[in-house]
Amino acid sequence: MNLNKAAEYLGISSNTLYVWRHRRQGPPSFRMGRRVMYRISALNEWVIAQEQADSRSNTALNPLTHKRR
Picture 1 (cartoon, rainbow, N blue to C red):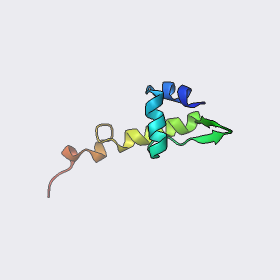
Picture 2 (cartoon, rainbow, N blue to C red):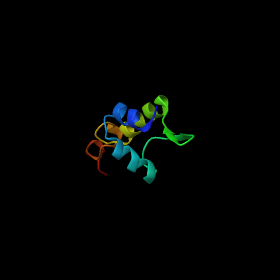
Picture 3 (tube, one colour):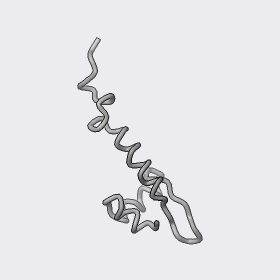
């Protein structure tokens, strides 16, 4: 899907996705001619990775759940 459709799919602005792409922070993309494209599977995998890296979603990363020594 193109950048605008991918941004809509993720629920973010196309400008945000554009900036993330240029900072190499966002989901993986590729060029098809002059168009920037995203695979739905790559978007889903990226969202899962973001969720797992967030301590609010991943209790293993939450510093409040770790016991102090």
